[in-house]
Image (tube, rainbow, N blue to C red; front, side):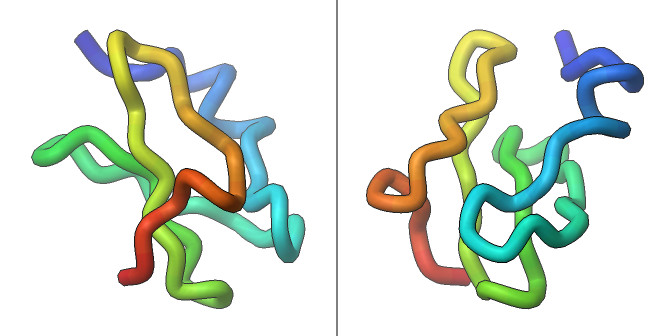
Length: 55
């Protein structure tokens, strides 16, 4: 299952408020400005800066 397109349109990086790229494998959201990867677990984006991994 993937994230709803409506959700992807409104999600932004919590650090810089920039656009996010959705990746399917592994399921994640990437901020190229901050170079951070936010995990998606059970179709729920984990949008905590402290939980993000470097790109």
